[in-house]
Image 1 (cartoon, one colour):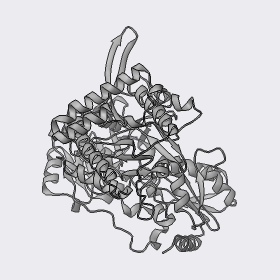
Image 2 (spheres, one colour):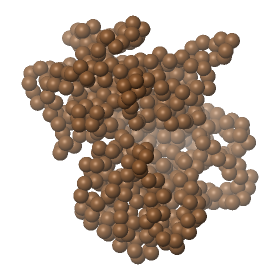
Image 3 (cartoon, one colour):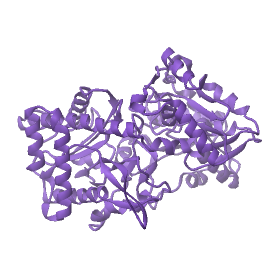
Image 4 (cartoon, helix red, strand yellow):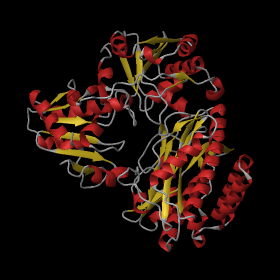
Length: 592
């Protein structure tokens, strides 16, 4: 069924309900970035496969809003669909609700499914449209037109032991209750799958790359309840949760449970992490306390020593796999064998899967050769799959889920002759990565205050990249994890010891090439002086940076020393796990 035919059927469903506009987000009832196929409604209807985007269908028009990571991808995938691309963040792009207002008359109706819209966004939309005299419906799901819609996953969940997590569920619940008391609350309602997975030491297979299980949870002084399809639970999981003080209830019963909360429940929740229907189920007599970040997410973001050690073990395994991959790639290209972008993805997965405790990839590998590297979240398809030629540069962003840690790494490499322009751009990106890696900063520093360190050198060239510089990383959980971030936009969450964050400045020249260098960094204590506590970063990722792409005249002595120290660390930590041939290659790559 073509996109235009789907939209025609969709409009017919709106007409039957006297709805003039419908908003389709990219989320599910758990407001996740990556979601089960059952809830990939926007993807199914529009044909756009990026992870972020909002589609609006009116009776006469259609538009899709997405951010800079997906501009080029969306332009390609929306061709022939009659859907207008709205580039978020650009000055001439209208806001979604303002655009809808121009499409509708007073007294007409805009709708969205409240079960897949966050409470914060839904409340804001309802308030805006009501002021404009436009009615709002949140109870209509038009996707009954989706034939053969995938079912909600029923995959088996499993428990990861304390040897990986470093803490029992019972201990985590006690810490959550302690945090609730600090804000005079006794209950919290959780819908985020990674948060629930962390709390219950539970993992699953319900979403590609994110080892989570579809569920809700409530933690209160009275009891902790996990709402999950019982078909997903083994005897081992049930026994563990029961022993840790967790009551198990059916997934859909969360709504009836919430409706029965009494005035004695002082409920702490994060409106942008809970769906509108669940939020609306809370009785009016309950005392609701709203927070920007749930304390559970703070606790999850600050890794304990067991988790940190696990990350470091995972980095060694990932570094070994990457070393084997780069040797393979170098040999293939030198022999004149055909290598495509999809070959790169397949081979990376093969080498990683050979490592102990490998579970799956942590996201779809981005292997962008030449101009494809300029598409920030490019994913090769059979149609776009480029052959890598012995010239120019290749950008590879990839990662893995191991039971003891999650990895995310980007390397940009020369696969043949490169230009001076490429070297200059690469070196300026590298300088930004190094300066952020070397940062020393006072307690209370937020990511926006650090972001300039990564951008300063490309800014001097009047260049920029529009994605964030850094995102949090889950421990055998989602590769994108809050609450901390490093980006131009303000985020009030301070960097704290134990947080693992990406460091990934980049530069993208449309139609030419893309450059990104990404390492994961751990916030650590640095020094306490009369001026207070200071923190620093420890680089965790272990993989050489391509020296063939460096313009050495642009590096300071201090930056060269950092790079040498980093490469020495890479060799020292990886070499015990490499063959003699692999050691020779690695030593050559860091000294050429």
